[in-house]
Structure formats: structure tokens, C-alpha cells
Image 1 (cartoon, rainbow, N blue to C red):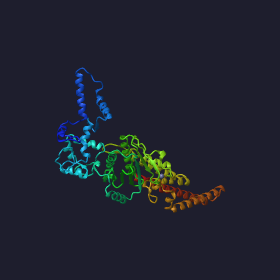
Image 2: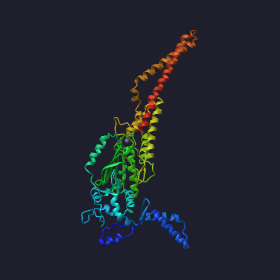
Image 3: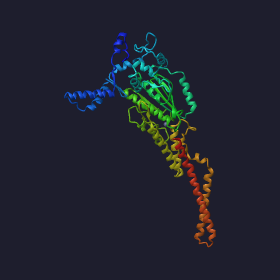
Image 4: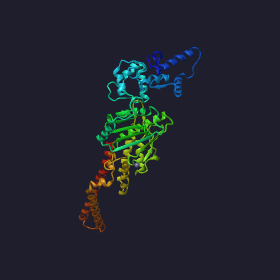
Amino acid sequence: MEVSPPLDGTPCNFRRKAKRRTRGITRADLEEKWQAKVAELSGAGTPVAAPEAAISGAILIRKWEGGLVEYGNYVFLDVEWFATVLDPLFSHRRDSYGDIDLGGIRVTNIASLRRLDNEHVFEPQLAEELWSRELAPHLLLALKSAGLTFPLPNDPNGGLVILLRMDTKSPPEYSIRREEANQARKYDLTLTVACWFSLGVPPGFVERLLARCCRLGVPYPFWRYGALVVGNGAEEGLFSLSLDYSEHDNMLKVEVLGGGGEVHAWAALSKVLSVMIKMLSEFPGLPCEPIFFCPQHKTKGMPVRTTDAPAGSGLVEESYFCPLCQDRKAGIDLLAAALQVVGFSDEEFFDEPLRREFAENAERVTRQGCASQHGSDSEVGYLAPHAVGTMQAMNRSTQTGLPRSYEGLRPRHDVVSGTPWYQDVKTFVGAASVACLTVFGVFASKEDEDPRLWGVFLGVGMTLLGVEFLLIAREHKLLCCKPREDAASAV
Ligand SMILES: [Zn+2]
């Protein structure tokens, strides 16, 4: 098994090191070896207590000591060897031919090597030649799990991007592409988080954060300290995420553009912040102050959680919610549903609970507004702006920025202004029916002997009463049921 030599490896040194055995083993092989040892000891009259739990316990202790690392089903038993094997990928040394110094190993796949050098894309074929066919999959998985690589979308060779090899300056097309993405969709919601690292960031922190976030969609362009990621697949065109770290002021800026009232931008930001919390847990004590800015009142910042928490936990505490937003309660409901910790694995983000809660929140707000339509006019006047106020608070646009799910909850005069005849006819019919019934009452009380006359008044009065009920039912349908349909289609 060939492995790369140490950093200062002379050819002689390298040959000696290359013969070193691989210092890793699959979990299954390790268990098998342990069972054989237990059987041997038992055979020799030395019973082993609870042998089935011994391996897990031993691995846990060695991990805690920093003596080994485990990725997937593979255990790297020697961290020094592990680091030495991966080192050539992240170093910028050159060999005597001017190529990337692979620690003395010469490879035949020159095209892959050039691609690693020029595009910072590492192809699995090169990994197999470098590390052997058996070891390469385990090391590639380790790189992915550690957030050191991410797959380049639609790459025919399955290339993996290594951000640590890239330049720290953003490419010129970054701002152009960002503007293009915004223009193409005319997003009406901007979510911003600024994160200040007062002492800077440790090497690899931003790159590993970015590598995980680049999996949220199609990343282009990307560089060592930033990326523009746009929605992919079912989320194509639904959000645009930009991440940008500046060494100048130790500030990481995250901005997500999306549609107001749609979950996609909120979900993308929740995922980025969840990844950051995970990263911060790997660097305990790193000073970091992430602030989420109210989409409506840009200057009002709300501190974002930085400590590890179960999936579904809020990312902004209720007590920090923007005091300027009109409806505090509705705003908290939305923030709790839309900004929360999202669980994730090497393969995917588990954001279903967030999407479900967001939809439920939208429906609840719609229902509240709907219920208010059954009450008095004063209740309507209070509750309808309640919902609108929420979204105005959450929404950048002040003109037409209402999200679809909340459109049905505009202030009542907006809705009614489209059907003025309604109110007039209803009022007229109501008055006429009351007049007829009053006349009938007068006749009845005087015990009038002409039943045809008061019978006509009774009949007309009852008919008008029926018409009024029909109009009320029709009004109810216009004001209440339609918004529900809107909400359902929006969610
Ligand atoms: Zn606000």
C-alpha cells in the first residue's frame, strides 16, 4: 500500500515510509479481529467481560483523546498518518517538474493532476491512483464529512472542489452574477446575517462552512472565502444565497434573496446558520457574534444562537425579536417557524419540519384573519392589519410585497373597495325587509281583517330577509374562503 511521504521526505525516506502499512481499518474488520481475540483469550481461560461493548468504548475514548478519527464505517487509527496522507491536497508546494508536489508520488493521470492545479477540482480517478483503489473511497468520504470538499454539480468525472486550494479574493464575476440572479427573479425578500469573528477565524473554518453550504444548490462562482449559491431542482430560481468572508474586518456576511411568504429563503438561511452552529461546536471558545437583521427595519439586529441545539430549536430567541415590528406576536410565530436549527448529514439537510411549521404558521395567520371576518367591523379592522403588519415587518417591499399566502388578509377596505355594490344592496334589502315586517306587525297588532294586505307585507318582508341572508353568505364566501384557497396554493 502506497501512502504519501512525510513533508520533508527524501526519496530514501519516502521509500521507507511508503512501505508503512495503512493505519486504518473498516469497523467490520475491527470487530472481527476483536471477536477472534476474545475467543483466543477465552480459550486460554481468560474470560472477557462485556466484549460486545468494548470496541465502541475504546473507539470513543481514543477519539476523545484525539488518537483516531472515524468517518462512515472506516476507522483511521493514526491521525498523524491520516494528516500526512491528505497533506499534498492542501499544500501549495511544487515538485522539480513544476507540478503539485504529491509527496514524491508520480501519477500517470496528468489531465486530472492539471485540473487539480488549475481548477482546484479533485477527481476520484486521481484519488485512486494516489491512495489505492481500496483506500480512496474511505479518504474521499472523510474529506466530504469533514467539509473539506463538495461535489461540483454535473461534473462528468465526479470532481470534488477543494476550496482550501483557491484564492481568497472574490472573482470579478461574483457581483455580476449576483445582480443577474436578483434581476431575473425580482426577489422581494432579503434576509441578512452578519457574523463578526473578533479574533478572526482558524484556518479551514470558512472553507469548511462554505463547502457544506455549497450543497444547498448550484454554487457559481465560488472561491476560498465566498460563494453564490442558487436554488436547484424543485427550488430552481426560488432563492439566491451569497456568503462572503472578509479578512479585513473578520466579518462573514450571509445574504439570502427569495420570495416573500415563501419558505425557500428562510430554509436556506436556517441551513447556513445550522452549519455554522455545528462548526462553532468544533471550535469551542471561538468568539463569534452572528446578528440577523429585521427584513423591515434593517438597522435592528437580533442575536442568533451560536450553541448547539436540537433540530427545531429557534435560531432567534423570542425576547430578541425586533421591537419596531408592528405585530410582535405574529412576528414571533413566523420567526420561530422560519428560522430554526435544521439537522443534516453528509448527504442531505432534514428541513421537512421547518417547511411544515412554516406552512402551518401561514395557515394559522390566514385562519385568524378569516375568523375575524365573522366578528364585528372593529375586530376585522384590528385583526386584518395584524397579519399584514407581520408580513410588512418581514418583507422588504412596501408596495406590492405581500406574500401570496397573506394577500387575502389585506385590510378590509382593500377587499371591500372592489365590491361596493355589495354593501349598498345589502343595506337596502335589510332596511326594506325590516320596514315590511314592521308594517305587518302593525296590521297584526290591530287585528286587521284584510288578510291579503298584511299577507303581502309578510311575504315581501320574508323574501327580502331571505335575499339578505343570501347576500351575507355570498359576502362570506368572497371575504373568507378565497384567501384560504390562496393560502393553500401558496403553501
Ligand atoms: Zn422590525
